[in-house]
Length: 370
Ligand code: OSB
Ligand code: MG
View 1 (cartoon, rainbow, N blue to C red):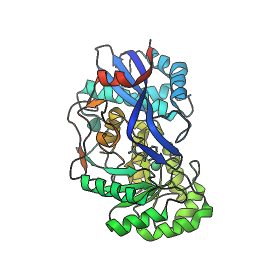
View 2: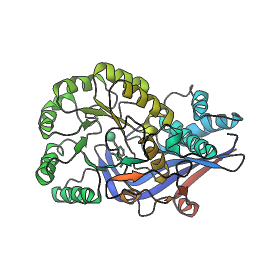
View 3: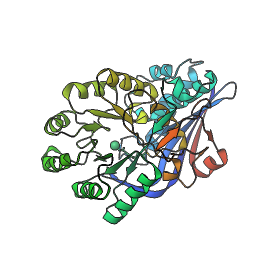
View 4: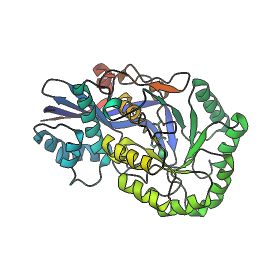
């Protein structure tokens, strides 16, 4: 791959409905899209799902654009030619952290590589299925009737499991209610780090509802308290925020901090690191699934591809485009079938086209290199 141009776009898109987690409420989704172009004119697309503030992660739109300009994109363009996205990661190894920024570029390079190789991205990265099973992540609704209506609507649409966001004061109640209304449906909760070991009583109660897992109950940097909590629960703990690399995954496995891992390709620095975590967890008997960050159709293409890896053994947080957007950036949009699956396109790369006229409507800033 001989690159001749790299463009980073700050994109802002209004969500169909606001999404609330324990760390805040999102109305507009901000992200940085990356477009890499090689000398023959083929392009690849990636997405850094950073927000406009350091809420889920310390990375933001502004830190990403700064790191791109100062440390990553000029360096990438100095690499006259590269044969694998890994070479970009080696080139920016001296940049500590900023994994979402790295991921935006790395995923664009994977898309480009798959297109040049003439294969769908999922085959390029070693996926073993041409479909994925889809679960839905429901934000903190706060109103019980509205929650029941939402769960009913998503089950009706075919989603294979329901995840609800919880925070202190909105945890056991909604779980109990969903069990009462819908019985033993596949159900899990995500706390986004809102609790401490002082809330053991809440988790002991949740432990009675045969949840598939409890996601990231404790601090986003913690592994040892999670190990303590896991030792006291029957329910599997799943880590999200705490796993930023294969090193964290190894430590979590050794300590017993979780029994499941949510791999978000953007959180861990891209598809290559995702594969390292995937391969490690597969060999140590820890099942994984793929998490989402309210991505546009571009990032979604990478999530869908990652979810075809063999050790993805639970439904992933990958909904159809229509759950987030009135109009996605890509054609065709991502759709979940009545059976709760998304079929992988057989076209090369991520398999969907970015529609420029749509993208243009949502661009807040653009940086072009050289
Ligand atoms: O913790 O999984 C999370 C969205 C934004 C930030 C963090 C998370 C989420 C989701 C949404 O749960 C998953 C999705 O549908 O993209
Ligand atoms: Mg999560």
